[in-house]
Length: 406
Image 1 (cartoon, helix red, strand yellow):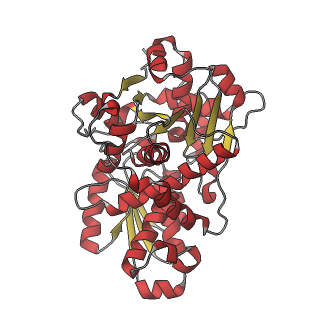
Image 2: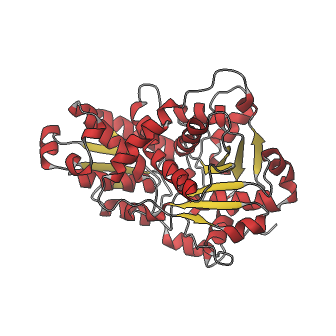
């Protein structure tokens, strides 16, 4: 029997206790990251696609998809976080403010000579590592990238093509993070990871702020369409850094009256869902192989900084089997009417699949009503990657792998 979407309301979102601060994701802080990204040659806002016919089918007022497949030619949003964190690290070493180091200056020979040789290291399922490798190459520095077992060979080759020393390990994602962290400590590499732990919090914070550029662009684009704010945001989560960056930015901008946020995870790596289900406010981890097609979400240990934000501000958490992501890929690739096609990979499309199911599956009626999804709802989605594994993309979208039959 086909696995179902699991959902849970977040009882902690309405607690009267002091909420986690989202000041580090405020407009002021995110604008610093956005200005840095805007200094890159070829910077353009990624498209915000309006899927009017899709919204009409679902019985809601609007669906808007931020299409990150156009980000700097890298086919994914992840470069936003890694590049900003690497730049912030360099600024700290040079005792400068990030505003003093736009792309042209930070990539100059003068800065490289002043800073010396740096090797940036990371664990990735693909997109983050490619972004780190690309940025390191732009900076004239080195990068080392480790990938968990089961990673796509195509993604590995894309990372190597950016000049990184890269390999696939025999460990799952979280254990691979530990392996490279130990090596980095021994060899003096600089870890660029969005998973936070005690003593390692600055770089994950900067990565989250870098992700905020995407959220700020989306809000600007909605405002240009005369939409003050979305009523709902569906955002995918691995360790939770991206989800918390988006959640924190919108919570900071809109204070008490803010969009309702739904956090969407792969059911093989649903650490945030399980953390909410435990009910004590503490983060939980998921172990094992985490064998999901949503490679970018196959992370079992939450970012502690991100968890605090998601725990205090998100309304609902979904745990989704792989067929939900596959359905989202097919929905976005085969638009209705004059809606734009969106090429979205497994981790990018799961929110579209989840929204579709919430609105059409009567067994999820209670979840739909709990969120207040109705004819007046305006939903914002983030397609965080394109077809970063083209063979897998075609297997799902062309050949029907992971069907969504009931």
